[in-house]
Length: 180
Image (cartoon, rainbow, N blue to C red):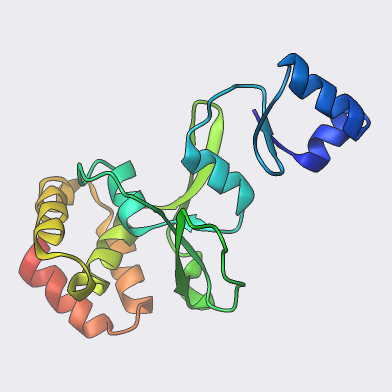
């Protein structure tokens, strides 16, 4: 279980007792302000805890959904356009308009940890939105994987996300030409 410094102080009472628990191996300090009862916790769960309002997107989400076998070098997190910059070097921050930020957000739990991540339908729209920013081979790999699961997707959700997105007519055209 991941815990913040404040949660640990609440549990152990004082900073001294917390430090003692860390020294004795009853709890592990993973990084500043992040503690766990397990020695190793995947980085994506640590970042999800540190930035609870951020949403996993782009390369991180494509990899999570097995749409690509390319392991992302950094974690892609979407935040509100007016949010402060995330100073973490492991994070690529994607700024979204407030109106579309929370569209398609799922909470995925794995191994007792939870992350906020865009669903597959929203990620299809994001793939088409950012087509020109992605390497061609990478884009094609993900697109081909989407073609294999297109009948498993909720197309009403896809249409809803397309309608809310900037440049919706271009995205709709790409959806018809390349996916369906």
